[in-house]
Each structure stands twice: as C-alpha cells, then as structure tokens.
Image (cartoon, rainbow, N blue to C red):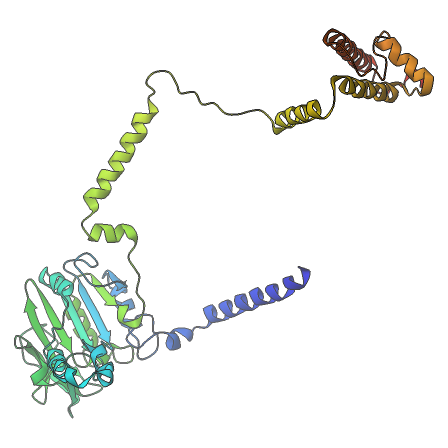
Length: 396
C-alpha cells in the first residue's frame, strides 16, 4: 500500500501543476478555442465584439444550446459566425459506398442540398416570433456558395442602418447570386455581388454575411465594422452561438420535460406528492402494531445449546455438570482447593447435591437444581457485599 501512495501522489501533483500552468497561461485562449469564438482572444476571435457589447449595456451572452423559441429572447439577435456545416454533408461521405442503383438518390440529394433551407423548423419559429439571426459563412462553408471579389469595400444599396454607408473588406468575398434564396434583399454589394443580404420572416429577419471576418478582433475597430455591429444589434439582447464551436450545453431532464409540454404533469405529480404527505400525517384509528424482534441472537443460541444438551446427556449428567460449575466458581471466589473446597461447596448446598449421582427422580432433580441455584445466588451476594479490592478470606 505504501508503495502505491508515492506514484499516486506524483500523478496528482503533476495534474495540479499542469492545471495551474494552463490556467495562468494568458495565451491559451488564443490557441485553444476556434476561430469566431467569443472565448478566442487572438485576431481571429470575437472576444472584443462580445466584451464591447457587454460594456455598452447590451445583454450579451453565449448561446450554448440549440436555437429554438425557448432558448433565446423573442426579440434577441443571434450571431452564428464561422464554419457552418452544409446540410446533408454526411451523404457525400457515403457516396463511395453506394451501389449503382442508388446513383439517382445521390443526385437527388445533391439537388436537395442546393436548395436546402438556411434554417431549421425551430430556428424559423424563433425568427418568426421577432428574432434576428445573423449567419456569417467562413469561406466555402455553408449552404451558400461564395466567390472572391477584387474590391476592398462594399457599399450600401438598401436604406437600412443609417450612418453605415460603406464597410471595408479584409478578404474580398461575395455570395454567388444563384445560391441566394429568392426573397433575399441585398443590403451591401461589391462589384455587383451581394456581400450582406436580408430576408424578412414573419416579425423577424435573417441576415447573411459573406465576410464575417469584419467582426473579428483584428478588424472590429476599422472600416465601420464596429458601427455595423452596433446597428445590427440595436437595443436587443445579443447571443453568440457557440454550439458550432463545440461549446454546447445539454438540457437537463426538467428542461426537456418542459420542452415536451409536460409542465402540467410535473405540477400534478408535485401536488399529488404533497397531498399524500399531508394525508399520512394525520392518523385515523389505532396505530398499527410496529412489532420488531428485540431479542438478541444470544437468546436463540442458548436455547439451541439447551436443546442440544438435553439430547446429548441425561438430567443427572446435566446436574453433575452444573455442580462442577458451582465448584469452579467457589474456587475462583475463595481460592480454596481440595477437601476444603468440597467442604465449602457442601456447606453452600447443605450437602444435598452429592457428585456422581446420575439417576434421579423428577422431585429430586428439582430439589437439587434449586439447591444449586441458591448456592450461586449466595455466592453472588457475598461477591456483591465485598468491597472493591478487598481480598478473599483465605488470603488474609
């Protein structure tokens, strides 16, 4: 056991040292977190945008769960910037394993991918309720294709967000017009190509950005990028979607039950439990007999030994053994031996229990047993009357 303590202590100490080292390493946030994450403090992160909104009075938080009407405020603004997976990407990985008869299904899947919606049903429900979802596609990722443009700035072509007429482009990129949904309206364009577009959906809207790098730490302070961020957020609650960066928080059991519409069931179950506790608190009628066996196992042991001795020996033998026990007790109490001991025992028992007597009548058996019991009682009385530490009579 002692040999195992040293390695375990060394491992624990090493883990603590590494934890302290990593926790105090200020550059860890620049290497650990993904690009476009609010936890990333490098030039590619969004930590400055996140902190700026918090410092200017916005309720800016991280969105670490799937976007739906109950995970964000109804009038909130959600920024989802970075590498957004294309819908049905898993179909492409399985294409090599498909059989020839499935070629038509693969072609149909590719067509479906080309016209796949930008929102899921739950996300669309949240947007329709008044939310604003800002999607920024990093490079070729996402369901909308992008292409490079040579201009280094984009100009506003739709009367929205006063004061932000142009934005500087770090990496000239725009959406391919064929991939934009039909109801998209171009807000900013460069070289006749859409850079930022908007689509109204119910009471909310969807905004897509081909150059989300304008909101990164390295570019936020130039080219009207900070003004654009402020215009898009307004006075609404702001959420930065971190689920695409792997920072996802799973809902608990209670949250899932509420989401499934089981809130009334939970209230009913709680009320039933309270009613049961209250009902059992008041007793009706006499209490039930709460009997518990309080006897020690020693009682059963003695009873078992008695039954065993009754079968193994006669009454006379048992009486003889009982008398021998009395003789040993008197010897221990008085220190006597030999004839003196036998005379003391005979005196205590009044000479009515001679040793070696095996065949006795029931009356004689009772008489001898009572005499031995009186001898034990007298012995115990003398022991109790003697003061503690007082020597036996024969030791004087």
